Image (cartoon, rainbow over all chains, first blue to last red; front, side, top):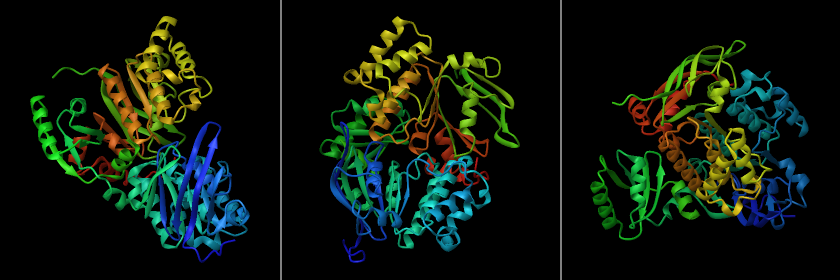
Length: 309
Length: 249
């Protein structure tokens, strides 16, 4: 067994693969999470995020490769790992017909501890749901359920938190609040692995792995992923956006073009300054009005799209 | 300006569960061919309102006409003139692509001939020829959602209701999905959509924002941003929804 405190890593995945019938859910996935790091797995449904969580939480065996959590092997040391992790599955997994406070007491009892003993760790989050402590978990709103689930995952003071899509289907306000909570937990030196399909949440992580179809496309800090984007990216808008996207796609000099909110983001095949002028001239001829076009810094979603193509 | 045809007309719509006002006196109009974004925080009352408009739940008070039919007295006609697609359940996973199209075509009352024409057209435009005999369960999420949308408008409804259609879909497929939405509006189908992606809010013609059961703002994305001096729809949403009192449903 590895000495727990000598490794700087709390999660270590080496060439992990998993197949379900004909579907390759994970293809040789390797990455490591440092102690105290907030690490994001970013990718759409089907990327393999949940499979990875199941393997790391010792609920499923990998076909190939090996993984360690807090210095312990996921197969040999599964009993010990289960005491040290807090796992929040993607689907709401609390008892719907137990109240908020019953759920919390139940999970504390499972780990042979009490809510009082660890109250300091969950206080910030729990006070927000305390007014509803008598309410059944199934009757809470989406954001509230997530807060309760996080409290239950924390109640035994885990060393590593595994959070599978905690913000999916949750509104923008609750999502922000949830990430603020994660930041505060990180300050308590808890290592956090969190997955999300929302690309805008990537920048809130220390490092991220971009995942697609069972593979890791890139592991970096959000800043580095953006710096590595090699093309020059432009934002373009006109008064008639629906027509604009069709017109722009006709142009040979345009390499890629995707809608991003109120703008199109586009790259050119070569010499971007000349190409940009050609495009603007063409749009003028096509009768587009209020044309705005300027270079921009790419977002994580731009980078993801580029890596996907 | 040309008179716009109203396809959803809501006045003072209210739904109470006991003492709790899930939807509190909302009024708005949606015009033909428009993409109408129906936004709000979790628990704001969106799903309850949408269920009433689809004829699935009766209001406590207020009036609404959908596709020209009264939601109290003509809920069956309402259902026949709308399409509905949710993120959670929209297709039968253990039927094949073709079987799903045939089943829904039959439910929507299309003739055998129509179903045959529609299904081959649909399979071709969505590039599903190779998987047409495969179970829907085997398709990637993005394909499922594109197929579910196309099936929801198979019977050329006046309005299609989309409840978070792109949750979890990859960024490229998410954009292809919006192309399908634009195509539907070019055929005069009205789109009523909820989403948690604020970039998608920008693609709507008009947006309504629900907070605590009420509509707190309704305008084009551009006007909303101007009105709240916000740089993005994300900001507009945060400003409105942070004032919410209601925390749990």
